[in-house]
Image 1 (cartoon, one colour):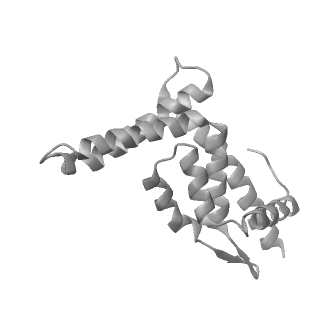
Image 2 (cartoon, one colour):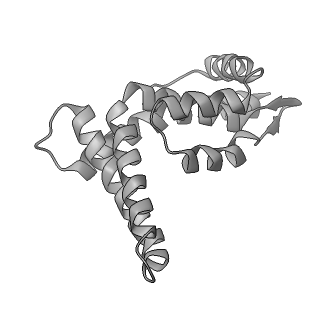
Length: 161
């Protein structure tokens, strides 16, 4: 994990907050749909998008920052988006099965989306022979390391003040 100083973390958070301040959720939905992310997932991101926190007297759009970083991650790893879309399609097809489809759909959708993301992560990692779950974990770790380093550095910065 990249170690940021407290001042670097505060600066990085301020930059991320400023970049996201004028973003609109509708634009984000269009961008996500063009990347192949299912509409159901994009609409669920709206709850995260609207999350804000007050940190040392400054309102930080934490949700917007997180959602923007998720999209940046998906752009950098397109195999995950394709895998998730295929998994969501499998869930939709399962829901169309008469009688038992609505009962099986939540389980099938969850499993298919996770497996699709794992296979997509394997493709993105460049080593298709490796375990898909290991590749998914490695890619997720890379994603969260940046966010974690920023928030830990900011915590240190404001605990010193």
